[in-house]
Amino acid sequence: MSKIRFGLYFLIIGLLTLAFSIVMGLLLESYLPLELENARLLYYISKGLATFALLAMLIYAVFFKKEPANLAIQLTATLIYQFLPLLIRYLMTRKEPFLIFSVTIIFLTTIIYLALVLALDLLTARIKQVETLLEGNNIPVVNEDDYYDENGRFVSAVGKAKEK
Image 1 (tube, helix red, strand yellow):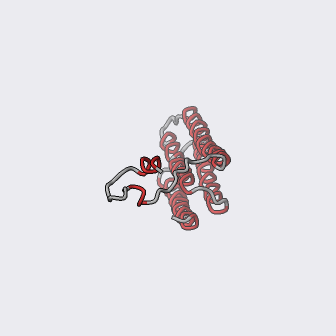
Image 2 (image 1 turned 45 degrees about the vertical axis):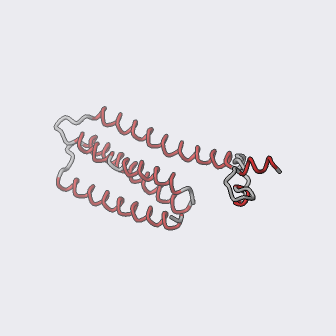
Image 3 (image 1 turned 135 degrees about the vertical axis):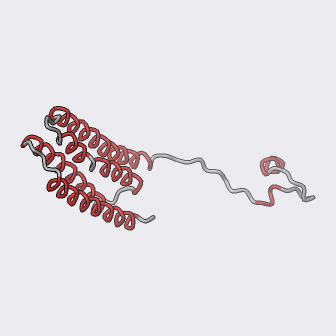
């Protein structure tokens, strides 16, 4: 698959995810409102982080032509990260919301997400540097006639080369 086609698929998936995320946020706000201001603030922080991560990944994928395999891993991590606001919303819909636990979850998932995405990008850059220094084994091409002797019997090409 070409990098341009992959970037287009990536953009379509990202925009659909962004649209779904916005619609889901609006629906949850109207049908399941958060009662405490602190709970609402934590939800909006997690929603902002997830949306920013998705938009940053879309810009990164479209404008910086990177390896499709790495972008697929980064896209998957970003799409999983989009569930963070739903988890925070779930933890905040109680009479006594889990504020400290929610802050801890936001912090840990953001650190893990950034570590995964940035480490993958750094390792890819390092692999590209080292890749030019690697040499493969050169196996010489052997003529098909070298596998047979003058009577038409099979002998190995190595054995016949020793005879010569």
